[in-house]
Length: 200
Ligand code: ADP
Image (spheres, helix red, strand yellow):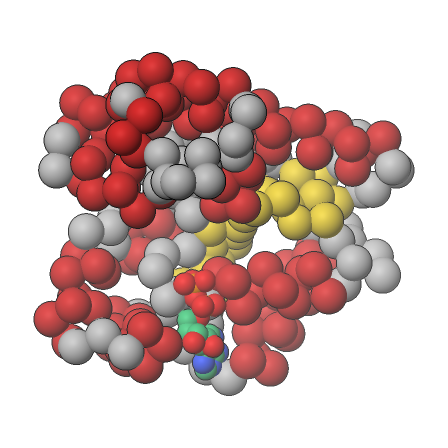
């Protein structure tokens, strides 16, 4: 049996940065965002379900789903958002589970599931340990504005639409404080992984 770690954070918290460090160690990282894109690829079960509920007008000329269009439809309509989630989420969970089982079959002892909405979507049952990448609001705002070229207002709107990172601290088994340098973050990651019996 492998130890399964659920990695999470908030927008611009440094989750991708940490996820890349973990991948560099040769550890399998299963990314919920990647799986969500794969789940709606042409021909997949969720692809057909989406077309049957949202109509062929959400398709692009090459027959693939226009994720931007779909996103803006559900952004303004909570009922449709629930419907879309009820199609996509089970497919994502199933794919992540399949990949986890594949990694276990390869004899891997540590597997990471990278799930942005791990706590909000109540997916902690899928993992053994939860790891939060945390930054304070000031750093989060600054890094988000820099990374995405957002104005302060644009960045704040995105940060405020999410569960505050502070609230996630008490929910997590371990927290990486990513306010400092990349090296400090890497050291914290390695300490936590070793605590959780990771050996290189
Ligand atoms: P997330 O995946 O949580 O949205 P990223 O890993 O993309 O966050 O990090 C957000 C931005 O902050 C990126 O531009 C990244 O390069 C930068 N960043 C992340 N961690 C640090 C750090 N410790 N020091 C300086 N910049 C950082």
